[in-house]
Every structure is written in C-alpha cells, then in structure tokens.
Length: 196
Image (cartoon, rainbow, N blue to C red; front, side, top):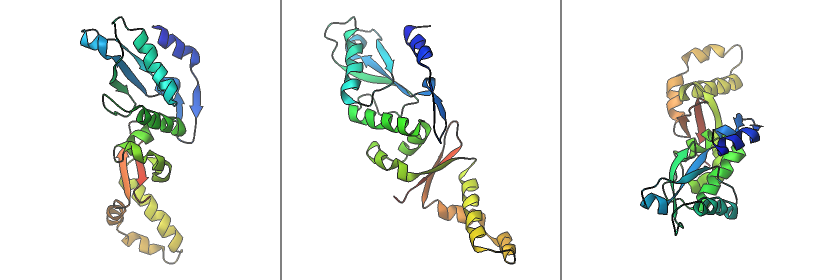
C-alpha cells in the first residue's frame, strides 16, 4: 500500500449529513499530471482531494511539480477524475474550488454531479435552491407521491373515490416541465426544481 493510502487510512473519518455518510475514501479526487514528464514520455502526477482555497490548491499542484524528475516542470493538466465532475483537461482553479466546496456542503458528489449534468459550474450557487430530493425509483414514483400529497390535501373521505380517476401518468408528464431528474449511482433518482 503506498504512502498516500496509508495516510488516508489513518485519517479516515465519517461525515454525516441529511444526504448520506461519506468516508474519506468516497471523496472525489482529481489526478494532476506534470506536463514536462508527460511530454518526456513519463507518466507522473498525483491524485489530490482539491483544497477549497486557491492558494492551498495551487500549493498542492506546485508540490507535485517540485517532485517531478523533469527539469522545468511548471505546467500541469488534469488527466483523470475520480467521482469529481469532469471539468476538462485544463480547468480553472476557481471552478475546481466551486465544485469541491459543493461536495463538502452536501457531503456527497452525487447531488453536485447530477446538477452539473444539466447546469453549469456558474450555476452552483443555486444548487441549494434547485435540489429537491433523491432516493426515488423513478421520476414517475416521485410524481405519484406529489399527486397523492395534492389529492390528500383536497379530498376528504366522501370524495376520495375521485382518486381512482386521476391520471398519474399525465400528471408526471406535466411535472417534467418544472423538474429535472437523473439517476445517481447509489441514491436513486435525484429531483431538481428548474424554476429558480
């Protein structure tokens, strides 16, 4: 086991939130590669859990470059993502920080990554407004739940027979205009408001 894995093992902590429990091993990472090494035919870089401060993130990158065996190791690129939303090979440090801050705020990558499938990094300040719920088997299940809540509010015992005539499928189709949904790897379907 390499030194980084040993360090992670000793630092293992669990963070709980209303969303899920996330071990340090679940934390999204990015692989920062030294381009001087890459251009010399050597694969060298490091997996990092990005800092949420620009100076600290730059230091993480600079520390990796200082360890390079190649002279003039000054340029870097992101060559891989592990659960971290793919921002491309040359992402802006500010965008890495925005994504990482949201991972920490929500204690999960899945909500953030699902949001970014439909919106941009610039929209992340609205994620808290947009995110509604997750854990549904499908959007249809969510829509049926919403319909039942609405019907329960408006129907009483003597009018509950009307429920059998309610068109749940059409209601779900109508709701799709106001919500974005996508499947997550571990937590079912995530639902987001689109009107924010």
